[in-house]
Length: 158
Image 1 (cartoon, rainbow, N blue to C red):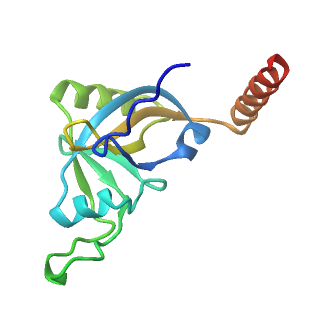
Image 2 (image 1 turned 45 degrees about the horizontal axis):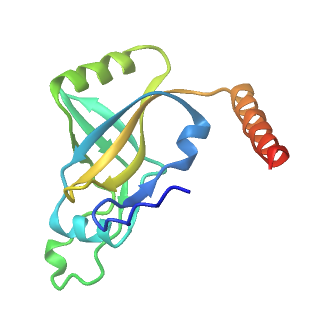
């Protein structure tokens, strides 16, 4: 049996959007950095984030994360430096990646969906974005059938 990696405190998932893969057909993924304030980083390390209802948008040549929630840091001594919970956060990608996203959104039905927020090996906050197309009700049923069949097949092979 393969040995498990030791859990690195820096490489940790902060928030995951599980409904995104159910509601959208993710065609491509991309890693982006996030511009954060100090209290936001501390709050993320404590695990206080939610990206389930958020989305990314290209505006004026920049990529923005909209409607993501980062809980206020409880141990903050000075409330004057506290951050807004649902503010727009700038995402850091290079020009080639930004143009790729812009072209994808230009196609009919495509959107940029945040899939996972985490800290990488260097301790930097990153966001995994997916270029996705919305699924219809029938597509969701097909996905559910395939998942159930895979689960049943694994049960039978045991």
